[in-house]
Length: 196
Image (cartoon, rainbow, N blue to C red; front, side):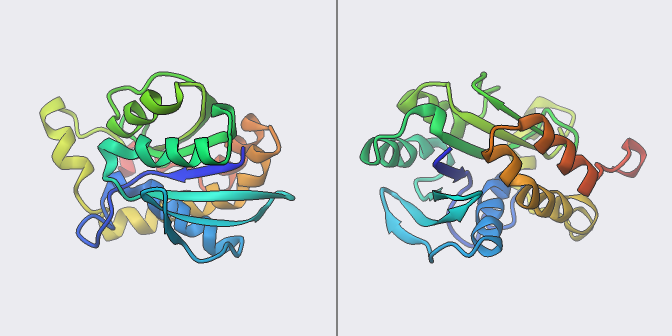
């Protein structure tokens, strides 16, 4: 995996939204592993650095979520990357808060950022699904994902989840998704359902 992508919407208005957990994860990766400053390229903010012994590219598409694939596709084509060399961090409403799942390929489950990437590079890329929970009713999903995380959510599970994902990331990059998910769960156990 040479291209790591965090999904979100650009601008301060969206910075703390649940939908932007991918951007927050990308920023945390850049800080933790000493990546270069982000530069404006390929309709995105692009950084590079060494992680798990190899050079990696780190991308935050600046096209807004629904057109994320334009930026991802441009980077993948320029650097001649196969889709399997791309890893995307994104919010997942169908996972309980604090849960994480990593796998190669799959559907987009109605996530417009993933749908856009599928259209550009196909569906066979790595996804790290970061659980944010479901508001309960379909009509509440859009406003829910565009709400800011509460201070309590950041302190109890969202912040610890991101820290754990960043810390365990070398396991995933070395081809051990199960070990990665186990380590994230060990470092940051999801809250119990009663605590949510």
